[in-house]
Image (cartoon, rainbow, N blue to C red; front, side):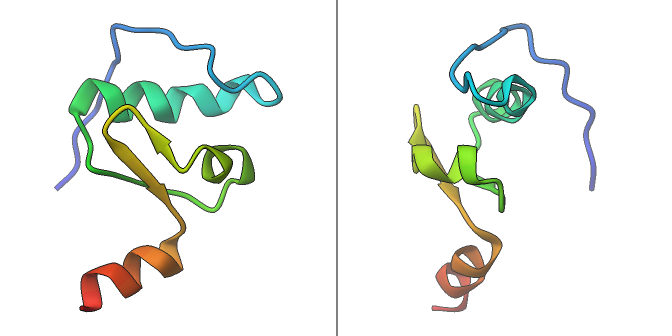
Length: 65
């Protein structure tokens, strides 16, 4: 299933790569539990609000248990 998300908020959390902020906006808008990414700027945050930012490999290990 896929949904098109158009966040009503604009964030400026990641300064070094502002285009990464759109992923945080979507995560916040949808109250996502996980944001799965290989992007170093996002992974450095670890958490944003109630969203765990995790690499694909770590996510797979999490759901395998």
